[in-house]
Image (cartoon, rainbow, N blue to C red; front, top):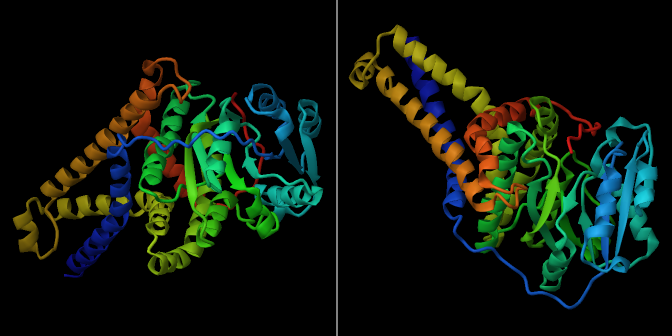
Amino acid sequence: MWHQELYNVLNNINNVVLIFIGIPFILQFIYMFLFWLPKKTYKKSEIKNKICVVIPAHNEGNVIYNTVNDLFTKQNYPHDLFDVYVICHNCTDNTKQEALRAGAKVIEENNDDPKTHIVSYALKTGYSEILKTGIDYDFVIRLDADNHINDEFFNLMNDAFNSGVQIARPYESALNMTQNNFTTACGLYYTFDSRFSSRVRERLHMDAHVNGPGSMVDFAIIKKIGGYDTTSITEDTEFCFKRMMEGYKCHYVEDAVVYEDLPSSFVDTFNRNKRIASGNIRLLFKYSPKMLLKSLTQLRFSYIEQILTYMFNIICVILCTWIPAFYIYGVLYLGINGIWTNNDALAFGINGPGLQNLLVIIGFCLLVLFMVAGIGQGLLLVALDYKKMGAKKRRELLSGAFLFPLFTVVYCLTMCIGAFTKPKWNKINRNT
């Protein structure tokens, strides 16, 4: 019968889909189970380099003063060896005045072209103007307008730079981790990549994912490429991809911590994730063929690892569309036709389990994902890194660990919706 053949075809497609989404999940499980690997540290350097701090900003007058002021008052680094540039991009508030008041140098960019109203164009303008100054900086640190960093951040990045590191990312944490249950769960999700994935990548000599807040780049690279050569909505990821394919190695400086303001509601999460999903999926399709080719010619697994990790953007779409649609269809089809056991399925002429086994499979997968990859992962993060996440005691973060699976569902949904949008660089609601 046609409906039997249809079910068989869809079931075979689903098996392929499960393999497609299973490989990246296995990689994340490996990262979690290798949590015991020691972190990489860099030798303390007596040489102090000249640092350029770049902060793109769009209507950030309510946070930019504190961000810049903290750099000058809290960093244990010679003040004459770093400059802070705030790039005011189409600002209509007091961002410029607040940045100047805090001691930053201000670069303004104003235009009416909506295509350029994204952070990459602010950085492109900023780096172009900084190069015109002729100041011979050693390396650049890029921050967002709401970011704060630990007091030794500049020294730690300086140590890494003098050890030969040209591109690096820090540990990413949150300013408002304990604001509410949502931010706690959200913070645990984002720190997974810092505590587990990034540490394992560094210890196994794979490239770190250098993507935005707190990233460090050798100024010689900026001069070589003539400023900033990416204009996508997720320019930080594209910048990392391009430098990798040019042969640069991306590192992870774990003791350097950047704290950012995390979304505290579904709406804020959606506004953040639609930019990430929209940009990353486009970059994945654009760069995957080139990176696969590079992995074969250079025998560099980092290319494959980057692709597998960024595939989660596509997996979110699959988990919100194909997976529920197929299994709802499967349960209804098997139930309506009275196909309860595997023997019933075989007798009926379909390739696949009966309803009884299918329900067991669904239940087992949900249990593993929620208990091990969800709550278990959250509890492990809390046990290991609660201090870096801004908590004084572990119990402050326990609610987030138990809500971690629920946030993962929310994250997946917002990423799926975001994949079909074209976001702009709008003003962000700040919580801190």
